[in-house]
Length: 342
Image 1 (spheres, rainbow, N blue to C red):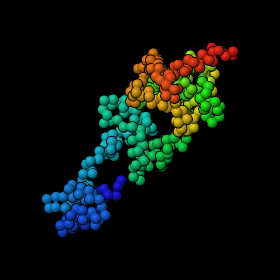
Image 2: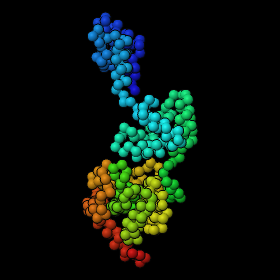
Image 3: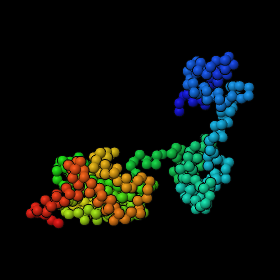
Image 4: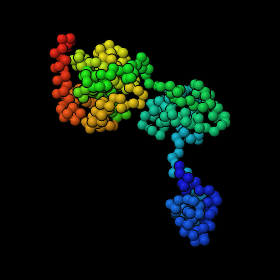
């Protein structure tokens, strides 16, 4: 918060303002004398002047009163009925999350009686030192005097073991000379409750969109099945590798490699530019699927129609040719090779 805020004026400064106004000094002169912003002095005077002008003591009283009534009261006031109810459950060794769920179940239509488990924890640890705080802490399962980070200092995402780093990816993948190397990701819908899988071929920029099951579309099992089905529909010469970020939905990447015959490489942490083609495509796809919308209602046929539109657009990076044309040419060239396997 800025030190020029009117509520932080000291008693000495308030007295100086009152005296300066009595002497007929201008607000600009007062601000220069105190080293304060003119707007701060003006706001202080306008809001806190009474019928007898600016008086330091009464001005501070008005300021304190405004702040007190402007702030909403916390839900868990120690004198409130909701606190008593929560306190009673805590004494029965209920966890804050259990209490929050029980209150929602008992009072589904009365939000004033709902409280999140985070609010309960905050209320417990924000209590002043004393017997009540000791009693509340003793009701918690771990009974710690201070709250630890929820993650415990570790990554809470699913363990993605035995990852192949993008740094061991063959050089020909980065050169974009040979087709069959893909980049993948998800675009999420409202509240992350829906998602669509996106796949982009690095050489031809061909786009594939993958319908994911609802609900919980981003689970490792759903992504494994949906991506396996979509990638296996591609001719085998076009299934060489997949580059992905470190999202937990790829926790079963080894099974995906077994299902499709593709090696899965992972980008570095917080390095979306290492999948640049996919990131750029996701940005374009937001024209069709704006952020904050529900993506679960789109069928695979609708997703294929959107992909067809993108694949039918000329691209500057392809010499203004269309991805579907370049992809077809590469596929035709590969099918002429003696070791071609459909």
